[in-house]
Image (cartoon, rainbow, N blue to C red; front, side):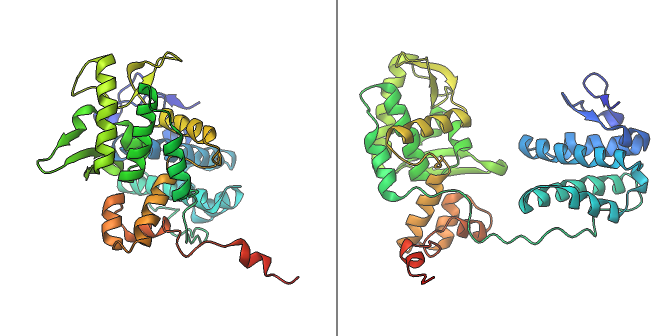
Length: 327
């Protein structure tokens, strides 16, 4: 049985990971293997989402090796290949699994738990992404959504402000959920929002005039209920159906559910999500001839190829095309 790391410190003084366990196949390989496992999952990976995904993939592979009667030093490239062939996953998911195994065994080699990385020479399936999977909300639909929200109460002001921030800053929903009132500030010549974004990036984005008016109108109503505080979350949850705000910050999931409710009320397709606004904003700016580099900076992408995945200008298949098929 795999041993828990909840109460026992690991070799080398690494802090124990809550609710994690080391597979038996790793424990049998000795202290170096155990150290490499703990180092990889507790020290090297800082994103909790990546850690969760990689841990799931690594455990799945270790369970497969156990069923094959393999010990860790015996694992060969052919074994990794057979494991990958056994997975009934999408190509993208398989690539993530293979990446997790490769990186884990890199650490195993470095810590002298195994001689070679068996996943290093294993080729993943070819995967080419020409367009992102996020559904696009059209400019017309976005305007309809904003106009549909009743702002006579603080909840409506909050929801419209959140959606407007998503649209007019192209920020990710996770970054919006982390905003505090102090993150909206006067930079001297304009107001700005400061975002703590994905990958530890810190970004300052100017606030356009109509968004500034909306945010201050919302803050005026929120301050009347909660009192002014620079450290208070900018967007907080509602207290049931009382049209009042709590002091608890809205999470990314809370914002996602709110956007879904507002879209449903506006009669928009249920497949749309908060991330759809990034697609729309990026495509809209590129259609207007804004340089790709400027749009990339707004979106916070490190690579312009990522920004291009959001560009839906020339990649739409119209009904007119399929209607012309003569079969």
